Length: 191
Image (tube, rainbow, N blue to C red; front, top):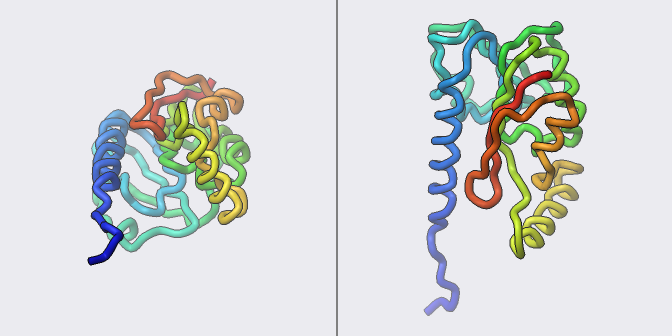
């Protein structure tokens, strides 16, 4: 008999379901011209209220086949294949920005926020979901995993204070809440 008991990972599907539920609820509130940074997986596409959108712009260096194959007929969807810290848009182009794990997937999050800031209209909203350092003993494990990820990915980290980064970059936090022990979601606005 094998001494290692291999069990299926039941926490991942539960976590994914919770995060998709949060994402779905957040996206029901968007309208106007919307940009999503780090949208390569296409996980948000089923949840946008397309009847309330004028346009949807998705930015990522690589998009999955499911993202490209998603059929949206109600609104123009633009796929921009480039890094999220290099936005080629005019000033005041968007009413809302969605950052779902975008800041933890870049090596220069402040550059991303500066570029995003210039493309948003006054009073624009930002919806975000990202990693947040847990409290207590789990924080040490999270720090170690984040360090390994930073080394392996040349600077990407899921141990950043997203709330502080948004505030320092000129956004006001409207709401924020934890989702489980390592995720944070919320809304900010351009001030």
